[in-house]
Image (cartoon, rainbow, N blue to C red; front, side):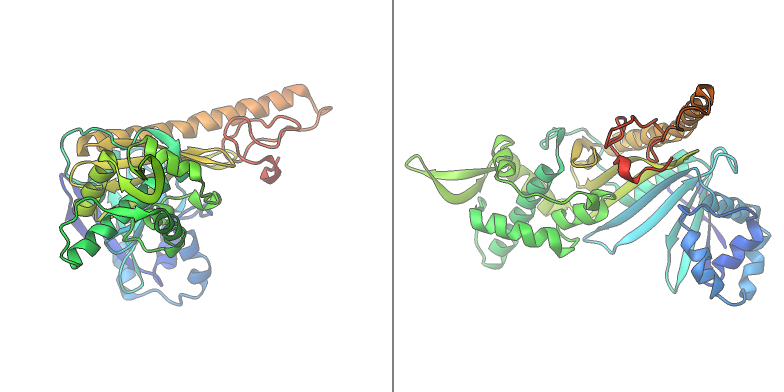
Length: 392
């Protein structure tokens, strides 16, 4: 159990073994652990098999800060799950907030070494974000031109990422061959063929598999390759089909935007993070946002994912470190406000149902957003979640 200094503030941190965690929770938390809690799986099946507690546990159970962190993690009303990877070792953390335990504090749990978990208690949202940005963002301090336009289908972004990956790969091959070629070209067959293998590779050193693996929720969308996305690359000045005497060839060459992005990511991209924020409402947990962060020396590329039950879209922003901090603070603020908003909506819906009397069937509500479901509709009209998986 230690107190450590972060970028600007002092935060409280302790490590507990996997076998001791169930005993620690049993000592300090009296309620039912929320199934969505990041420590739920640690304290159930593994807890029953963990045996007796170690002698080191007694020092933790008498700490007020440990008790606060455990209670926040056991019954949160806001969770930010984050996966990290890229050219660095993969990692995972869950940041939780529980207003009823502490109106300001955030507790973070992440796997540590030797079958243990590291728990950190931050005084407030700002202190947590300062530490998170220090670990995951670049130090870029000026705004840059957004070469990847704002909104697009997520498949189009995959094609852009693949064009960047191929620029990086071709540049590396040229270096190994002592070639001075600074304008790499790719055959159409090479582009389409390698895209399929890239989406399935799971190799987080490349943007495409990194984006697909780290961004929560993308696994619900089946990736659909289509020639229209190649045409989108041309429209965005990323790749062009070369022509010979006015006739299209089977060779793709990079436009100014594609070359600039290729150079930027080849020279300075190393790590990435994907995260999702969720809130607990009176009708269950609801996702409030998903995003993928790819920092480079020029800027922090933030890709926010939204969508319906059938397709996903991505909003891109090229942010300085300070701008990223502001965006994340606003996202967490809106997520916190969504807790009370969703509960208020559910209460209003319940009151309306009672007012109608028992003669009418009880309405169904969306498990994702709490909105009342319309009769005969296959999807929630508010958030797009399928009705066939909803419960009354």
